[in-house]
Length: 425
Image (tube, rainbow, N blue to C red; front, top):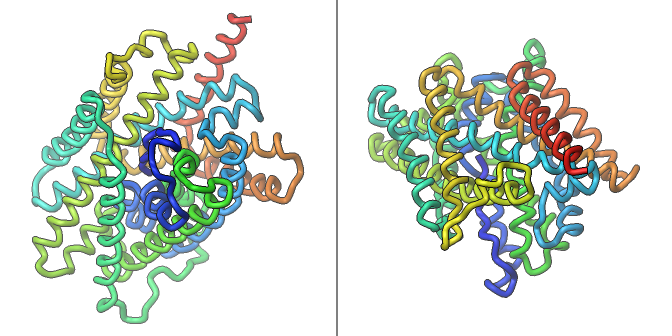
């Protein structure tokens, strides 16, 4: 998952960031645990058409960046997607946003933790017990950090993002001596039907736009800097995912590609093998811990806010004297345990669970697009985003049962929201 890295501090509390100072933070916002598995997962899912999937997913992002730039201009204090959707589609749908974020985190974080655990299991040549123990350790450490009232600081997040980028570049370079001119990722007409549902999985790579709107509060000129900073971050990350996918395709025979630990398969080509594998594994686990710390903190605050707004039970709004939302953290921990247990017992569901989380992001973005079109009317930007919405809707439809989770959550949240509104009136 992309990391919700922002500490919600006001402008006077810290120096404002110039455009180039903001780029590493923006890369860290977009680049999360997805880079650990998406290149291999996309290749395992769609094969030779992987680059078409990445190209389509990247193109879809561009109109959305214009939309989120306008969101920043409308809500410069970072009120985010909930206020934006409420303004365009009504309070009932806006009140569903915190529930959707909880729904994606309680599946996405256990899934991401198990990805990190799979790295540890493969690196040690151990059994599933190591994977489960590592995943549990990642989540428990993240919850403990939040329960202590700490947050992942910006310096640590930048270091983590830098380590991921350097690791990706080194692994890409490892495939250069192996490439022989053949193209295992040349588009294949026979399997074009896999491209649209593949976009749903690939979209996880770019699921950080909502956090970029929060980050914009740290820019010196949010209205001018948001778009160029976002485009630069998106370009860097998109290029890395494409190159990693190509590196996996030329380095590992297609039937042998591990959809979860493909990057570790690349690392095994480098010498000294054990050291490189250990470093890649350490970076994967460390990045996932920071990712989980940030998301748990952000979503626990959403739970508190939703409880105070009567979206969730009022008891969840309780915090300690230091502002730690112990009950919200407890709720998330219980949900992590339930989902993590299911994924541990049925490991074949891991990629499906990650795709379901990506679908939840897509639903949030579809609501944002609908709100944008409603607020802006028939402008070029709104029409372009409407076309993006059509493609995203098609990807949800073509993905079949993987999309049922987010649709069911949205339906349940909207039903409760409407009933609450009626009772309030």
